[in-house]
Structures are given as C-alpha cells and as structure tokens.
Length: 291
Image (cartoon, rainbow, N blue to C red; front, side, top):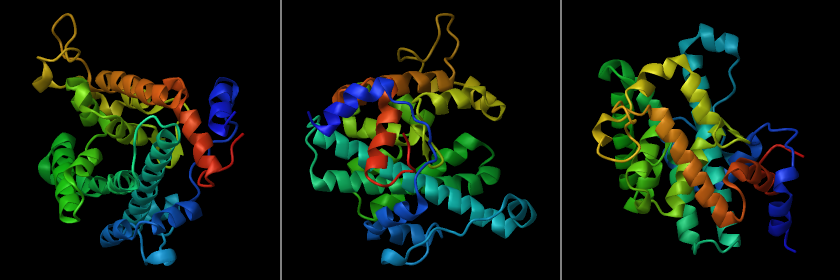
C-alpha cells in the first residue's frame, strides 16, 4: 500500500495537535524557485533581494505598528507576503497530490504557472486597501484591485487561463462558481480552495472555518447582507421569499461543493481536505511539525 493510500485510510482518525503554519525559512526557499514571481513581488516591497538571498519584510511588534505609520505599512506588507506565498505553496501541494493520484493530467508547465499565479494572487490586497478611501467602498476597491492585478499578470506574460485563477477566490469566486460550476475545471477549484483554506499562513483544519468566521464578523455584516443582486436569475442566489441570499451563504455552499470535488479526486472526504494538505505540506518540509 502506498503512502498516499495509507494516509487516506487514516485521515478520519488523525488529530492535528499542532497547526502553526508554514515555516518562513521554507517559504523563502520555495519562493526562490520562481524568479519571475520574486521580481514582481520586489516591485511592491513584498520581498527584497533575489535568488537565494530573498527575504520578507522584517517583523514589527504590535506596539511599533500602532505608533509608526511606516512600520505599520511594513507589517502589512509582511503579512500579505507571507499569506500569498503560503497560498501558492498550498496550491502547489494540492496540484502535486492530484498528479500523484492521477486524478487529472497535469504537466509541469501547468503546475508551475498555476502555482506562480496563486503566489501573486494577493498583490491586489495592497491596492484594495490603498484605494478604498478614494473609491468609497470595499467592493469598488476590491474590483478595481482585481482588474489591476489581472492587467499586471498579463503584462508579465501569464496566459489568460492562469490570470483567471487569481480572481477565482473569495465571495466573487464563489459567486462565479455558483453561477456556472461547469466552467470551473479542477485546477480552478483548487485555486479557490487554496485561498479559502487559509488564515494568514495557517491551513484551516475545517474547510469552512474561514467563511463561518466571516459570517459572524460584524465588520462584514453589511457586505454580507446585500448578496449578489445581479445574479437573481440563477438558482441559489435568492431565498424562497424572494430576498437575496447573503454573500457568505453562497460562499459557504461553494466551498462545500468544491472541497467535495477535490476531495473525491484525492480519494478523501471534502471535510478532510485541510487536514490532508497540512500533512502533505508537513511531509514536504514546508509546514510546522504536526502529529
């Protein structure tokens, strides 16, 4: 019996005793394998240096972050850099696992390009925050930042199918999936899940942990309540009484379906996907030890 088969059989009984996230030193080694990515990240001060000499922005204490706007900016860029690189590493792990399991036919170019796109996916977070006051709303800033990132990826000569992956996340990704799930191949679903499974550098054991946290966060209550008024002609976007389905209810359903799809391809339950990826990333030496 292969290691993969043994892991699949043991997943329901495995308890993750530690879940500390990706190791910074290993993320930098991982990132060094993608020089085109580090060049783009250098331009936004998300990493410094090149080759095996790259580094993330230096840590900032909570006290320093509150007292100094420049240090607060550095702390924010560090968080974005660590998170977006972690998502890329998880995307890479997911695609490697699908390839090993022969679930889909993946060549080296597909795995590399999809990984690079997801490493870069959260560059839009920088512009989203900066543009929010000028544009007057979170949604307007998010959409503008997403369009800017797509343009950046095209100018960096990423093919359109990989540019699409970077926008296949969050509630907008869930909206597009629930509108036309048949247009979402497994690689695109992996892109969505690679981001949705993450809280900063930590893969969530429960695939629904992030969206359920968003549903109860008062900061997002207004954005959640408005739903998707432009999708009322599609199933699931309105309730029986005709009112709009909240955004994060749509996202929760999309996450369940996509986790089930990827889990099925890996021979596991969708609810075990986070646990599976933690163990796989740990075996690759990227993740903090867990048992």
